[in-house]
Amino acid sequence: MKIKKPNRRKLKILVTHELFMPDFAGGGEKIVYEYTKRLAGRGHDVTVLTTGNPKVKEYEGIKTVRIPIPRYSFNLAVPWILKYARNADIIQTNNYNAALPSFIAGKILRKPVVCIVHGVYGKRWNEMRGKILGSLSAFVEKSQLARGYDRIVFYSDFAREQGAEIGIKNNTEVFYLGIDPREFKPKKKEKYVLFVGRLEKQKGIENLINVAKEMPDIKFKIVGKGSPEEEKRLRKIAPKNVQFLGFKTGKPLRELFSRALVFCLPSVAETFGLVLLEAMASGCAIVSTVPLDYRGVKVQYGDNESLKHAIRNLIDNPKLAERLGKENMKIAKKYDWEVFVDSLEKLYYELLQKKKRA
Image (cartoon, rainbow, N blue to C red; front, side):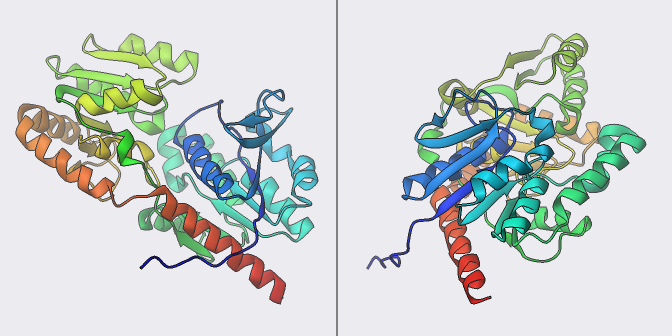
């Protein structure tokens, strides 16, 4: 018997993020799109405050306000957030650059602020940017996130542990991300290794390229974009068996997932890695540094020897890789966007009720 959900009033929700569709940088933007689309679909009045072309006032039914500042200057967005949050019930923000101005606006307006954390690096910043820039980045990260948000949402227990390392210990939740398994269907697998992500140091792309140099008989397909300078540098050092395919989304990306025997994500740190779920749902065996629930091989960041052996073992044993891929498909079915949005909705009503009693 299906239990009817309580008939609650629809909410006015202001979502803040430094980028939003059709502008796209990575998994964070896709996640924000997925949950805002579903919140709006449930009848809530959702507005996304972001950057980009001000003429784009709506994306697939989601209202957008695009303010005239660069994405990396979103810390200056307090006046706009104050304006558009005044009549909102909830401010839903996302790290990095949208979090702190949303927190400030929420305190001024006495509105509940929920922050979804897409990544925490802490001491790992030093590995990516060196000691001086890394220390500065770690300081900025902590100043943005280790605040008194009404609630902070992580994607996994591992991510929450990363948050605790920089002082985020109170008012935290874990809501697992979702996927629509119907969109990702495996086809006849081909012997290539797929990478999907931004072309930047923290994703471990250079480590993967260096490993590819030692395995000239294996094809590596790289999907994603980075700064023009970084892309040019990576293409220059890459061997002939590495193919750069640029940015892909939708059906072309799903096709690459569906045929890849192995998916590799050798990043410094991921709170979850939405692309991991997509690869799992597509029947790929996984090689990654991310310590989450998947079938494949977990390696340490920077351990290129282990990375090489893991890839070689799976490519040379396709039956093993395909068996692991089938197990990953079963695991991926547990992750549902509707459950994620159910959890968000429940949290919003809880915070509003708490505010009403205060």
